[in-house]
Amino acid sequence: MEEEYKATLEIDSPEQFMAIFGLKDENMQLLREELGVEIYAHGSEVQITGEEEKAELCKEVIERLREIVAQGDPIDRTRIRYAIELAAEGNADRIGEIMRDVIAITYRGRQVKCKTLGQKQYVDSIRKNTCCFAVGPAGTGKTYLAVAMAVVALKNKEIEKIILTRPAVEAGEKLGFLPGDLAQKVDPYLRPLHDALGDMMGAEAYQKLVERGAVEVAPLAYMRGRTLNDAFIILDEAQNTTSEQMKMFLTRMGMGSKMVITGDVTQIDLPTGKRSGLVEALEVLKDVDDIAIAQLTHKDVVRHELVQAIVRAYDKYAQKNAAAQREREMRFRARTRN
Image (cartoon, rainbow, N blue to C red; front, side, top):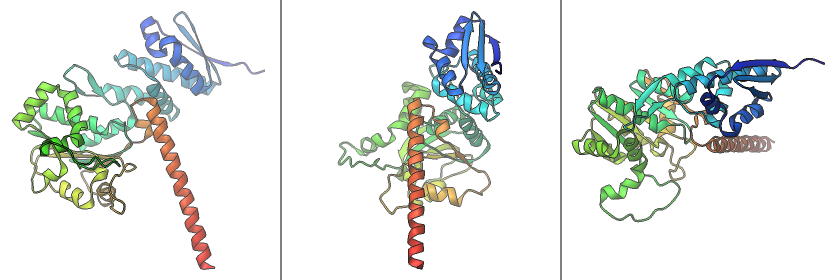
């Protein structure tokens, strides 16, 4: 009978052990389930037994998780699963690299960092290009990371103004008449942008910048006819723009400005028959210099791990329906030929 392979490593600090393996060793159990290995701790020594490839992979993942903990960042189940995926793809060395890049520091002193390879590539695309599209499901940090980059650019005096905008389109609901003046009517649509800026700057500093005109949060319709110079401009929920709105927005760019356009092409709330301006722009502008397109996936979801599962389930369902539709069309064509 072949002897089971054993890999070992040392974790000296009880605090580090708890941070990696979790309360009641819940993270240790997750590693066992995901990799099909056994993990035992004897004092400071951790033993991993199983197939050689899986045991060594598990050791590599734990070593990389130690790097993350050493940098003062927390470990959760989503991050562990992502570390396993990267290590299995041969990208284990990039786990620590992602976490070393501090994008911004919030007013509370919290460091804003990328948590996935997709997010790192997205942030690098913003840095290197004048215009960047970010396309991906909810929870991938598209808007928050863009806001963080905008705040840093404002603090560094690279720009004079932050402009955040989104189309005022209801998400599959009819909200009816909203009371108040125009600003109060559109505020519910812009609330996620207010929240992101408030989280980065603090409510008081944010309000002062709004009063000074250094930060503007407005519906997309307010952009018409303007030329936006020396500004960091973010268009959120861009999948709900029409073709005309998207072209209008993109042509607002002035000298010294940077644009980030974010959206999720699986959550289009436009009326039936209206083509999304984001979908069209991705096709029209894919080969234009100085425009980047960052594609984020369920792997980049950094909310609750259940959100990843939900996104994957919907993707699978959409693919199944698309395959069934193609089959129906092929059958129809075959019948009409006969």
